[in-house]
Length: 586
Image (cartoon, rainbow, N blue to C red; front, top):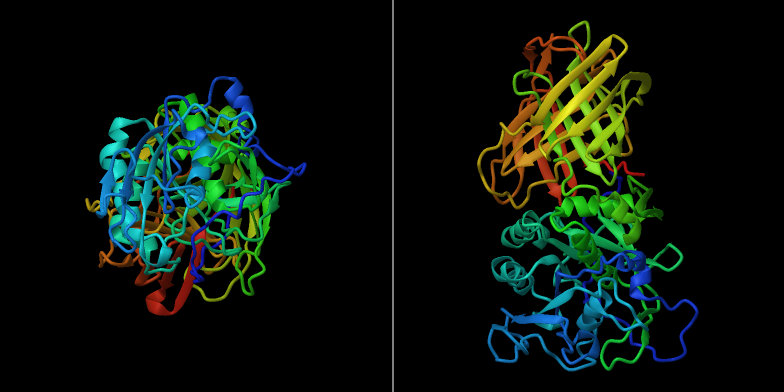
């Protein structure tokens, strides 16, 4: 993973509208949409999005008579729940069928241009996935802004109806609705977030712009939702756009101008002068269509991993005073390169793993791009609980390998005083070979021998609830200002399993484990007591059941403070740590 917090920052929100089109002589830097994401090599191999549909949801409607959309438009709908102003042609809160999303040019330039960035086949402005088709949905709201309710209903319609009629590769929502990121607003609004989540589970990524307010450590709604595919914008030459929002929590970025070529409207070739995350979202949705042509059954997570793996890391600086992560990277996508990394339909599930017949110790898996951060929570020869971590590299189809390392001398669990740890070296090399997204063989090679373990996902803490709208993201968490310790965290429904890993008073690498259920459905808040275990199985030794030794941290409180911020209060309130997701791809 990479590492940059999407801290809640509010700013005036406006639609990500395009700048005015320029029909003047093109500068040398004019750019075909296909070339912005290097899609032509894939198109030349026949992977052009054919057989897929991209749903574009926009507030301005679509010029459905535009030459670039002829033969490409397979359906229309309109949702305007607030009815102010009344934008659906039938005067109702919703409309389905031909004409429902139609609006005159140039009022409809934003949605039309995005659709043609994806499917345009004009040789003068070649789109990313010219073989794909478009389902156009117009949404409305108050004060010229997109209503989250209308946007949510549009997404619900895609899930209930459109995906059953067409092979939907992605949904792109290239707008910023009428709110911004915070811990309590629409980023975690239950019905909206659930709709984005179930679409992703159905194999349809909802691609959303990161926003265009120039943030360097935060996202705007819609991109701030955890289940969304948030996309940043780069200028040509791999230069960060001064208007794009950036955060370690975006999925990736795309070159989005300036001077993207378009034939939208009347078929004449023009340039779009600005660089916007709306364009980046459209280009990225086209990339999903190409990957779906290449591997029709690829999961959303798998396609994201391929685009990250094939992308180029671009350095981002966050000059915000007090930023916990002033420097990080975001991958700029390259579609042709991504195809070489799309070798499977699945990626391993992130979260806790174990061998069900050998309880009391386990593993944590997280995949970003073609890298995995892997942890083993075991015991040493003296019976002490001991943790080992390592960044593994993908070495083959669903196979990862690398070294496990041991640290020591760091900050004790629950302590308020930071002590930087030291590396104590490599304790073993490991290889994980996955036969599905939830089953694998782990081979551990240490100085004292080899151990081969069949492992699978650990889900026994799941409470059976479908969804908690405030649930944090599963993954590794850390405080980037105090590296060397953190928490491995997974949430299912309203239940969580947590392993804080740091050091004991003597500096030995020590872990504890806890589980619990959120006491609320309107926020994610868990109180629990982590347990310390000892005298269990070593990395390569025979199985020995461990013993519970106590609860040295007392009661801890785990709370989601914002979409990408996890707070843990230790020792009955005596110390408080704010954790962020750990991003390690670059």
